[in-house]
Length: 290
Image (cartoon, rainbow, N blue to C red; front, side):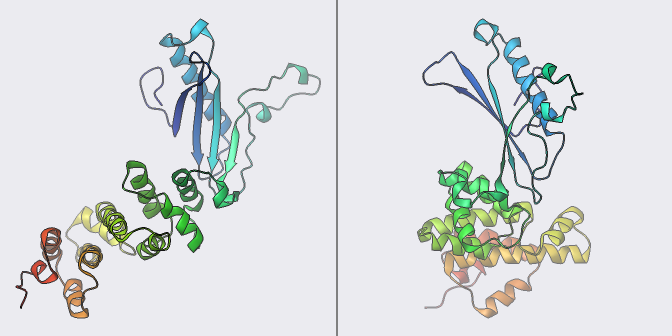
């Protein structure tokens, strides 16, 4: 969202909708997501609403000067129940006898994602996967059924890659479970390979290979400490083995040991060679014997 001064606000998403039966009517759906209980939410949403209205008035986009309706919706995926009042009005302590003067304003709707059955989150496969990823973020014990629903929204599209990146970053779902879920849900081998290839790029780019995140991140930052270098090498080795397995099948134990014991520089060379190699031996600079 952009406010009247042209700067970004902190709202997660704002959609401007034109109703089908009346092209002159504008409705804003203001979406906000929370991972923890935030008692400032009603006031925060009111500020967003005021910025929307102020912007519309500044650009003269309102027929007759009327304000468009704004529908604030909060998607909550925290561990604790949502205990925040759902309007600014409910936050106000009205003295007895003055109730008739208090007006209801700033109300919003909250969807506590962690307490909604996964299949009821949305009829859209992609939207359901995105909401379920939010609901299971930072939590342990994601079931196979939930993993299947998560990967159902993953595809080689911008939104699908966004869902995949969020699953990798925030959901306790290791790569082997992502791949297993893809196969259970009927993804064809080519699609599985493409998605896992994209996943490998995300792990490598963001330094989030399973169990190696701390060592890799510190190693990239400093690049000199021996322990940090080991973290980088382990992360690159994991990435190489996964990419090689997707392309050529599982490597022999000897080859896997060779990769595990290689230096970061050697692994970089092999990762580059892996892209165009026609067989495993070519990656390591060896001729295939006939």
